[in-house]
Structure formats: structure tokens, C-alpha cells
Image 1: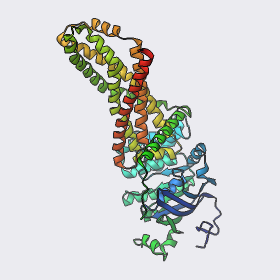
Image 2: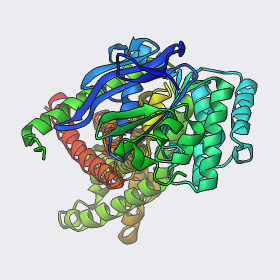
Image 3: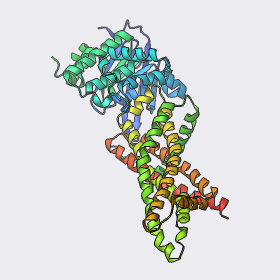
Image 4: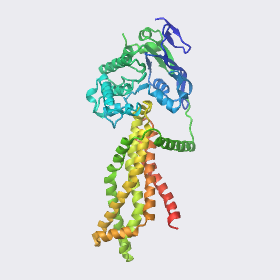
Length: 262
Length: 259
């Protein structure tokens, strides 16, 4: 595949004219004296799925937390839909977040609410919907799309790990986000459920036309769901390309991720 | 290897105070911004108020009984046994009832709020609420603080009534006094200057319990042990605040009413 380098040092195909929805450049983040992100550059194009691979503690989650405005960068720029996140007012940040879906590693379902109430929450609090029939339909549609309609009245404590992830995914997509951020969506799941979640991520991209950043250690998930893969190590950007391109890479760090892939 | 920067304890203390002031203004701002979460508020009133009735009732009843049993020998020795209802009512309504009930509520409610919000933080539920564009302060903090501010005074009134009833039963163990006579003496001994300041300070107790519980839960660290620390710290801090508020309330009441 023909590729050229952007000013951020990232590769894109020469013919890729799609709108950039997230642009991270020179991102650095420190906690006290600990430098977690040292120089991160990342462009996410509209309708694209990027997988970020990296060892634990290398700053993958911190990167997406900076994107969504949960953490403020120490240095560098994070632009979402062309606007610098750190310069947004509270209301503007809230408006931006309404267009971003964030799936947490644990699913982060609200324990005191049933699955139905969990899904109703963003509809009534964020979209301010009041028509109960419309809310019910959206909840049922979202749960059906993740195959969890049977669990609509269950509490999160009654769900398995995979079901919690799917319910969390349903709650995230119910507001039709333009960007999806997945924080280790398959961690802690068996291979079959992991595959189901990876397929769901791909289906969501096709159905909702979302652009996604997926943080994972799961190479099968990266293979299924990625258009591009970015590899991070020690808070820095190491390599980037399609799954197959990186599979053939001579870089020792990159090769170490593909050791078990035939 | 990078060196850890040691922050002096006094600086941490001031940072903590600053955080609490900022949290207070965030709470205050969110009362008036956006819609009020009525359903969550009613649920919290039920959880905080109704579910504490039994504990507050039993504790107050025992306090009423114990106070009469402790006071009786001394007052009998001075030939003032008839003063027992009056002594109990003034001491219970003015001081013992509100403070003991607030301490019980700090133990039950502040710890429960601290642990609940702390575990929500550990399991990323607070983050999930925030990044979805919803307002966790409005949904979780405003409702809980207002619910405790309203329910603690109501629990205090309930506890006072139960405590005085316990005193009546205890008095009838050794003496014989009718229900009507006992409560006539109890009511006659009381003035608005006994009842109103006591009620007002329970409003501040309720606010302190809710505020401390929410603050400790919201600012807990992201580890499982943080949930226990948040709950424990909420009880200790809320109890301390109750005594501080009580000391200030006594001074203010003395200046205003008992010159």
C-alpha cells in the first residue's frame, strides 16, 4: 500500500481525502514527575477504525482520556472536530462529548440501575428526550443490536462480563455518536465472546458510520476491527500501518506483537 | 529513576481545603443549573430517611431510658424527682437528641454515600457519566446533599419524640406517672428557644453529613481499598464537623437567647 508521512509523522494513504475528526500532535502528559506520554501523534479520519496496541502502562488509556477531555495535556495539541479540546468551555466540552461514545474496560454500567435504566439515562439526561414510547423504542433497538434484549430488566450484577460489555456498548451507541473510543473492549473475556465483541465493533462502524479508536492487547480484535494499527511504547509513537503491513515489519518491537500470529 | 516530589503536609492540607471550597461552589452552582433530578432526590430521601428510622428510633429510645435511669438517683437525692420530665426534655431536645442522632446518621449515611460514590469512581461509573455528557454533580451530589439536609432534621424530630417516650417508660419502672401528665410537663418545660435553634443546627448537621459523604466519595482514589478509606474518612470527618457545628451553634444560641 502506498503511504506518505504527514506533518505529524503519521502515515496515510496518498488518496485518503477523508475529513480528520481527531488530530493529536506532540501530545505529552505527566503526572508529577512521571512522564506517561512523551510524544504522541495521531490522526483519525472519518469512518476509520484505528487500533492502538501497546504494553500495559504505556499511556494508551491516558491518550484517549486526553481526547475526551478527562485529562488535560501537559504539552501538545488535541483537536476533535477541528477544535482544541483544552480550550473548550464546560458547555462546549459537554456538546463535544455528546458526539463521542466511550466504552470503558469494565463496561461501567450504573450498578443501582437496571439495563433499561442504564440505557435510558443518556437519552433523558443528555438528549433530554421525554417521549416514553420513543425512549423505549431506542432502548430496545440498541439492545437488539448487541443481542441483549432478553436482559433488559436485569441488574448489572446479574450479567456476565461479556453481557456487561455489550450492555455498556448499547448504552454508548444509543445516542448515535460520531466517534467511538473503546478502552480494552475484549479484556477479560473468553475468545468466543472477544470475537463477538470485535464483530460488534465492526458492525457499529458500518451501521452508524462511526470513526473509532480501539485500545486493545487482543491481536484478533486488532485484526478484525482495524483499518490501521498504531503501536505505542513507553509513551511514544513507534509504528503505524495496516495490520498486514505491521505483520511484515522488521522492527523488533513491532514484531514482538505478532509472534503468535501465523 | 525519577525522584518523587514530596509535598509538605501543610500544602496538602490547604489543597484539601481549596478542593472542598471548589466542590461546595460546584454543588451550589448545580442546584440552579439545568433540571432538578426529582426522582433521584425522592429515592435518596427514602434511602436516607426511611431506611434510618429503625436505627434512629432504637438508639433514641435507649438514650431516653438511660438518661432517666441515670438522672433519677441524683434528682431523688435532692428531692426533685418531679423535675425528671423537664430535665430530660430540655437536655434531650436542646443537645443530646440532635447530636446523638446526627452522629448515628454520620455513621450510617455519610459512610454509605462515601462508599457508594467511591465504588462508582473505582468502577469508572462517574467517568462514564461525565464523558457521556451527563452531569454527575447534578444527579449524584445535589440530590444526596439536599436529601440529607432535609431528612436529618426530620429524623431528629422523630428521634426526639421516641427518646421522650423511652423516658416515660423508664420513669414508670420505679415511679408512676400518667402519659398525659408526663407529656404536659415535657411540653411545658420547652420553649421555642429550645426547639428552634436545635432544629436549625440539625439542618447544618444534615448538610455536613451529605457534603462530606459526597466529597469523600467523589475524591477517592481509584483502588478498591479507596472505597473503605472514603467510607471511613466520611464518618470521621462528618462526626468532627457535627461537633464543630454544635460548638458554634451553642455559642450563637447563648448570645441570642440566653443572655
